[in-house]
Length: 432
Image (cartoon, rainbow, N blue to C red; front, side):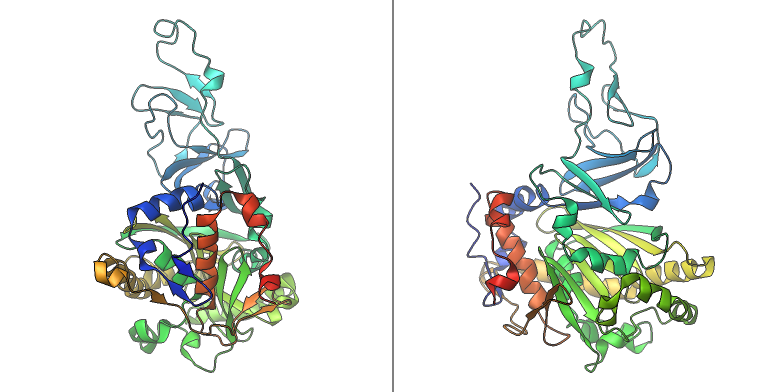
């Protein structure tokens, strides 16, 4: 039975206990209740282009090996040798027909079968059934528009149901043109902060931009759209904890680079036709697929995973992506924009890391931990918009998405299983 976390999040009043960002017991419960249950992003299909290609990643604290086997089928396994639990593959990515453990030499084919055991005849007397000791697969594996996800929970809803209306919003990032997108750069770094701070920020915090990023904005590095009070748009929550920051359909959120702006103008008819009528209402710039996968189109093109590494540490894996159909000079311009703006040395990223670090650090104090966080901006002023398929804030700056994100966090932390979550009333019915 899950521990009662009901008192830690009061989404009706917009109050969140700071305990959830620092206490080890809560972090351990998150690993069970959220990261071992939810669909988590693994990698993009362009990172596994050939048979034998593999990619090492994490689902929570569990190492995972994603591999396209020699026949072309994609698998995801625990990256753990079945013998003594050593991490099997240490390389970040590559191409291999098999994987051999560095400890005792057990060898697995790239479809997960145990193919080699040293001294099988002599030491095991041929009594070890290798068919029973292959790599452990994830419970479910699926992809959406080239984005590969997995879950450890066999009872979790199918990926498409888990995404719900968020699927269309993902299209605005990764399926704007024929052929989708491809990854063109990767950055990894560690931040001394709790994973939830960046996840919620990318899904709903437009409030910090004109202040925290003032220097980048005033130097012209940003398009500046999200800093103007008159800018249209809304905070949008399509359900299941997924959240996005959206501007109006005619607002520009692209990097202030002449060739990129010209490219976006040239493809706009194609993109509009592909995305359909909803694109005439809203333009998603940044968002988070609950719990820890975020996508960004403003000032750059990146998607990233906030890998939890304890209550006070997050490992960031950030990927610059671009439309496959884009010309080479546009891909290079986008890659450079990603390095300059959203990378360990990026001007925007450093502003954010400083804030998230300090927010986490102050949670360590006994007295300050007693002070709940205020997420009351726009309280009671968000409404379900059937055309958007989501809850939308009355004004483009709001903390409505923060409340949706932490409401879902609390629901998962309290639920004994997916059946309890499925039995909860639809959000639009609950607040009608």
